[in-house]
Length: 310
Image (tube, rainbow, N blue to C red; front, side, top):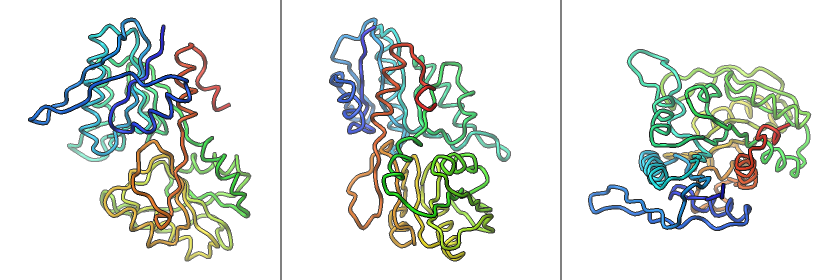
């Protein structure tokens, strides 16, 4: 099967980097709007019998990007593509992954069903909010981790006396994995969340006094949790506070909160496009294009993807 890379509008810069690393051009498409706002899609190149990869994180505007992905998949299906893989570096609607209270949806499962119904035969994603989301799909899911790219950057910085900090109990496994690779200590923040997008810090488990503390999270949305965790560990005597995350959602006043906090640098990947950055934002972007390109090539060649993380 011949390989085709199709990009939605969500993160064309990342799509171009991936295509470049694969030594190919993006498939030509028309992606525009009708006068009433409906999405119009047309694939301009032949895709019959081909192995097609749609690169489209479902980030803000999430509904637009999700619908665009579904319509692209439908167009490829009707053009007789042999296999359609949704490359979703960021899987939107993944935070509602269970019924945490009465009368709420499970949107992570809903989106999984929508993708399969649209004709997508495989999903390639990265750092899901919860690993069990893979089980919501009835099609194969390849789950990548941004950790190798982030670890490589941290090792280049050559920090001393590192303590990896998990911002909550659910992130302990992630922080422990970073701590193991960096031969660092581990600390855990006991957090209580009174309502969505708000966090109250309670206790810190572990020694952070005089240490270089790196908070490890899967995503940064409003930055409320992140900045409160940073303030709490700084109060406990941390010498330096930095943060890493796979996905920089950065909604609302997130950037300003980071500027006003004690966080020296936030390191995130380019899974979600972040525009108009300057040095005062204290945000460093680390590309995962090589990781995604390698995974795409391995899937196309029917090779192991998990071998990337051994």
